[in-house]
Length: 81
Figure 1 (cartoon, rainbow, N blue to C red):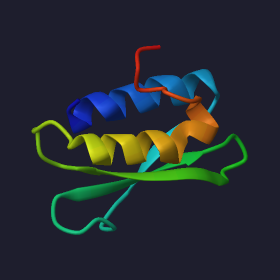
Figure 2 (cartoon, one colour):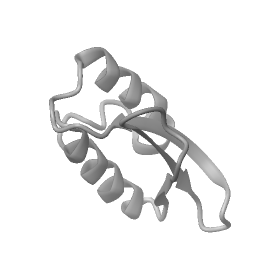
Figure 3 (cartoon, helix red, strand yellow):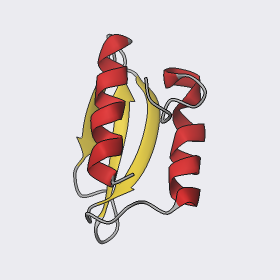
């Protein structure tokens, strides 16, 4: 899965749970981008990072991102909702 696909999926699932995805500008190293999920009160409830390139993410990175956001988006959220 490409980083843009992951971000699109996270945004879609976050909207369903009334969360907002925001990018933290100037926080990632190199091509890495850091995103946070914010609840309705403006509290950060999750954080994840993605690369800025268009290659598929390594399975270990995708697995880590899935595990990091599982408490918000559900177990195995990357497997087609």
